[in-house]
Image 1 (cartoon, rainbow, N blue to C red):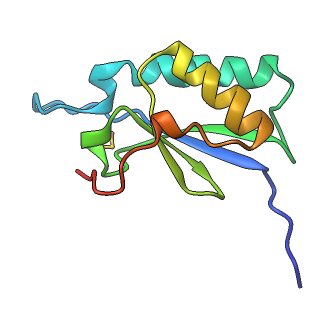
Image 2: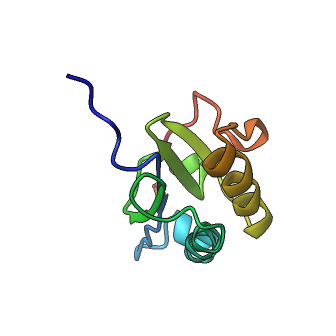
Length: 111
Ligand code: FES
């Protein structure tokens, strides 16, 4: 039996805020990027079933590449620094299925 994905693309943003002074995605504009992505996806008419879902996440354990977001089902990880990065991901990847290579987190980057 084949199963169709409920969302075409599902993007998760790490919004983790560490209280102990250690670095984290929330210290680098993650919330703003998340909010902007939600707004852009909605404005582009991509939101919803069969389209795109934007969700917040806790630490995704790739902090050194942060602020990070990951797009499923492809499992493509991005470093998202600002609104223009978000715009590019929405337009290229979430709308047209083209990975934004310049923002991809290198494979060796972890915590
Ligand atoms: S704090 Fe964002 S991936 Fe760990």
